Image (cartoon, rainbow, N blue to C red; front, top):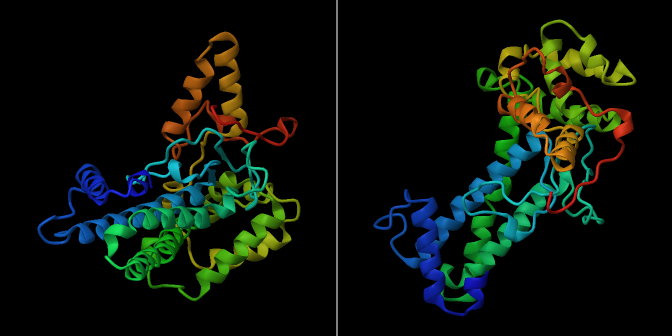
Length: 308
């Protein structure tokens, strides 16, 4: 945006070339991106694809970035500047943890749409390179942006199927049953306000025949039991589920506990234990039981602040 604001096309071209050289050297300047227009479009395409994949992965693990300003999105597709971030405990599409997000702009459920809005701002900045005529440039930008939603939906759909144990081994099967199964599941999660991480982890236990841990997460197991019967009929793979559904995440109460110990007394023990747990989030280990537990009721609503 700053390069565009200078009004210097050469600066914008050099910035695009630098971004490609640094992040996407596979874009061949002799073929796929022979002209400044080609290079700008090629860069826009790959950034859109990367951000669609990244935000889908946030959503799949219940991560709330907290401050999705345009300057907090990267061309490289990395997650940066997430000071007031948090992970969902009880599932809630409207979950907001940042103290400054009073309107819920960056709520959990809004993240895919905000990502698309931010990418539109990138496309606007590249308009001078996308075509000589403004209307034509807007058309090119819109064509690129039109790929975002399908890319996001594909990444999220593949991810949720994997979380449900209906991944690669089920491709081509049960295509009609899965969308309604997923939709009904998230309606159930909203109604039950079940712990998001433990729900998917305990689903694998249910697939192995033990329903009790999963049923303990909801006040009324009746609707859950009806959904489980439909899901189990599709023969989900619990081993595959354990490979993609984390048991250990940086739970908000544990993060605050570690921060308090570090800042109050300089004791980094809790920080190191938490870091060790989440470095291998999918593998259950003895002695880490408390790192798989939801926050106690006394923890209350969670609020995070920029700078933390």
